[in-house]
Length: 326
Image (cartoon, rainbow, N blue to C red; front, side, top):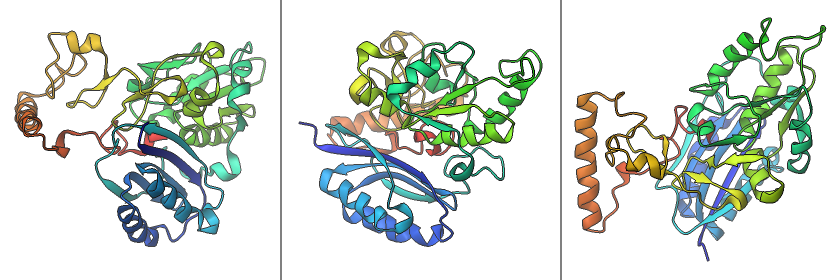
């Protein structure tokens, strides 16, 4: 029986005193042996935490004791290993960075679609299905027929929308009407914000997957699924599959992208130093640093000691300091 509970959570809600919440929340998590990353901003909270069940549930109850977070939802999964090695409560301008002022998902987000209704929506003719995640996430799995914007970070999405809204683009008007758009992400936070943005751009029929890919994989039977591949997650599991079971990907400790068994069989893969995707993108100086780090990791492993510096934390995956984890 897996012994560690992981809870992914977010909520868009006005927290004018968010800076004052940081230290008490950090202390409460540590006192309950809970680790992970929580982001606080005036627009709300976002993050993933893990630890013993009693500790995680105590933190969730602590958060919900604030009337503003009383309806905070979360998604659960279990693992045999603790997927985080530190606890970090960070202050941010946005809990997920789009970089467009005035976007308020509480007032402007698109329509929620339950996981059980998602297949029918994205199978409709004329619906543009957009994966709002980053390219390294899309690369290991996405929904059948979804469009990949090829973004390196969430903040690049508005420029992609502008380009595709021009005549001839995927989002261009036809017969004076903008297309119906369905957007999705890992846990729901990015698509809430992206649909709010889309509405400011004149898109009236915008939908997003409630609970994100994780809720879909948790609730929709694999036999009925339109999901293809695995879903990248921002912790040591690296990826999950239907039922939120741990997937088959590992992580390149140099570039932090997911890597498959085939990638690890490549002559360009050097554990801790490079993978086929980043071998030609790292300088010799960087590689020397990675080699030394890996030497220390191997030494620690031989002595059966942890070497946290080589481990993935939620803030080291991807390019947004952990913001995209949901």
